[in-house]
Amino acid sequence: MLLSPIRCIILLLLVNSVYSGRVLRKIKERVRKIQYEKAKKNVLMRAVNGHKSMGEVRDGKIHQPLDHFDSQNDETFPQRFFVNEAYWERPHGPVFLYIGGEGPISEFSVLAGHHVDMAEEHGALLVALEHRFYGKSINEDGLETENLGDLSSQQALTDIAEFHQYISDRFDLSNKNTWISFGGSYAGALSAWLRGKFPHLVYGAVASSAPVVGLSLADKDVGGSDKCVGDIWEAFAAVEAALFAGNATEVGKDFGCCETPEDLEDQIELMQSLADIVIGTVAYNEEGGILTIEELCDIMTNETETFDSETEAYDRLIKLVQTDRATGEEPCLDASHKQTIKDLSDTNLDSAYNGERQWYYQTCTEFGFYQTCEDASCPFSRMLTLQAQTDLCLLRCSTSPSTVCPDTSPSPISTMEVATPTLTGVLEEDLDKEDKDMAILIEGSAHCADMNPDSATDHPALKQARKAIERKVAKWLKEAAWKLMG
Image 1 (spheres, one colour):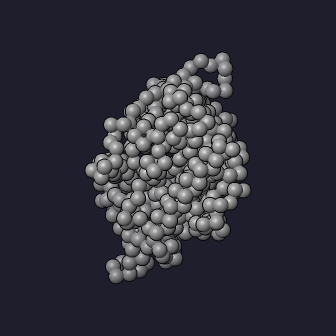
Image 2 (image 1 turned 135 degrees about the horizontal axis):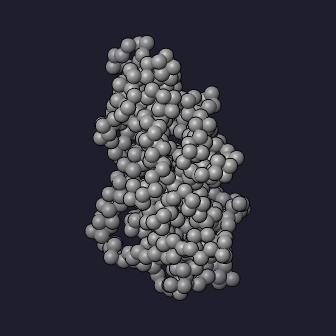
Image 3 (image 1 turned 30 degrees about the vertical axis):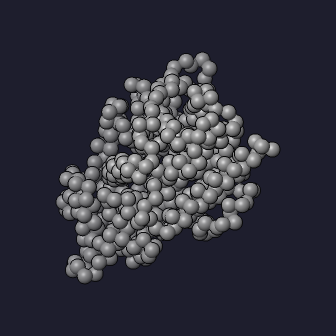
């Protein structure tokens, strides 16, 4: 699928949407709850400062076909959406579409965020659509293996096209109502793909997401250093050596594991959990409730604290795990392969609300977004292999091994260290170029941080990126109006 040659902003932030271990999923849930509370506070502050209230928000459900591409299948599922008319300048104001990704949406999807700030400025109608099979947009039996075949990005894009028509009919919209789509992480990819697949539906797309882990750990601007990367590398090598030497019981005690990682599968889970702490820190740096890159690197490189010189890196990694567990109030560190399989096998909608089973299914069948570490430049464990990830696919994602793991290209941690050197900032002249999409690299930021409301503590690069988005969106809306007049 090709992107439209113009009218798409791609924001390069920190980490891609990838399948993660249980520790990173817990970190993501922590951050999600923190962001939810921040959004509530933001809405309250806006109300105090004279902005319109959340009484304008309405939710609803649209019954979508389970399979848009099979005319013989009349099954449907309920898809949740939210609408905020508070800022809409009827009847021809634009429509800002917030696209849900691999998790639930809420009323704050149309109440708080950078897109909401821009909606107020431009008199836009705000709408948000939850992704099929996530949150509450799923049938009761939707997580059964035989029903997951209806979960795909292609179906999701067609859901959005149907939703576009639904909203257009409901609010009597016309071609004078310019649509702009917004999304972050996987939903950022959907935003860009939507513009490419249905350019007649959305005039412009803002896509927030992208790949860079190792570079952040070495970046002095966010508290990283080359020494930090080297010490992390050394620490993981020391853990591997201890496990290979048959000291699994001691390693389990050192890192406070919930269970002793005796089997190879459990040792891989341990290595995934240790990597998750680092990856989660990089992804959500300064988002609150977790460690920052600077704090992580301070622990891993602190020479004022005395450790045994032969086990120094190993001991610092132990301290990092202890600090992270204390921050997240976790009683122990996950290291059970059986528990991972159990989690991915859970078809109960309440316990699967976070989207764990669904996202791994999409990873296995569509994207190949695995976290592996088989490249020589990867700072984590060589035990994190593509084979281990695809074996998990075969176990839990389908009853048919021949269809569960297509020939997809993995997205290894090591390759996430490579940033395109030409995307080093925001250039004013980019705003005037009609022949290409606009890409912004936000240095020193966090995953999808540009989607949050402005904050006094934001890094200069983040503030600059938001201003560039605002100028580009304003330019799109002017262009659309000029074309209608012409």
